Every structure is written in structure tokens, then in C-alpha cells.
Length: 80
Image (cartoon, rainbow, N blue to C red):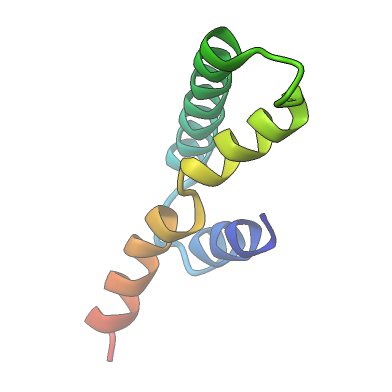
């Protein structure tokens, strides 16, 4: 999460993306994580797997920092 926040601040500071695409990307990531968490709870809700473990799996399964760093890497490579 720290890496994702760092990438988002760099994207905003370097004017690679405006505010709206950053917010839309964060909302889509949150919706994807919640959808995956809901599916995991629906299919694997047993006393063996606690719900916080399913939430951790959902957060780690949906990439945030790597996908959002792509425009930053392209902009950095373009200006070299």
C-alpha cells in the first residue's frame, strides 16, 4: 500500500495523470477487491479460514502499485 501511495503521489505531482483517473483507478481497485472478497467469503466461508485471511488474499490478488506505475514508467522513459 505504501508503494501504491508513492506511485499515486508521483503520478499527480509529475502531472502524468489528472485527479479524476487516479480516483477512478482507486475506486475500481477497491470494487475489484470487494468483489473478490465477496466471492471468497461465499465459496470458502469455513471456520478453518478466518475472514481477515480471505480479505488479505483479495487485497494481494488484485495488483495496485504495478498497474498504476505503468504510466509513470512510460512518462519517465519518454522524457529521458
